[in-house]
Length: 108
Image 1 (cartoon, rainbow, N blue to C red):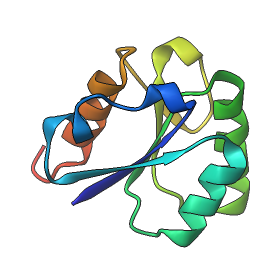
Image 2: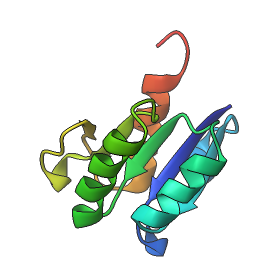
Image 3: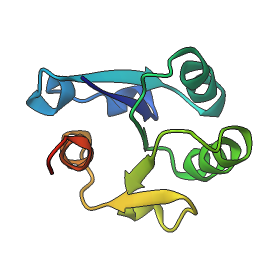
């Protein structure tokens, strides 16, 4: 099971559950505080997808300070350079999630 925390506005919810993969669990957070709380309560999170422009840089910086062992951070390339964040091609949530899953699946 791959667990991805999606941080962004409520309208960024993927329409196809977990990018069409039953072995993927999607958790949601709105903003930095909510994301930090979810990460603190759930150590099974394998990756974080940042969808908020200004909030993405703040969250990445805060995670680097508070939890150096935090899961990898991903964001769409359109958000611009954010230190410690892997940028992905694509804009829609399903494409971004699929890209993360491919990177995290064993043997890929």
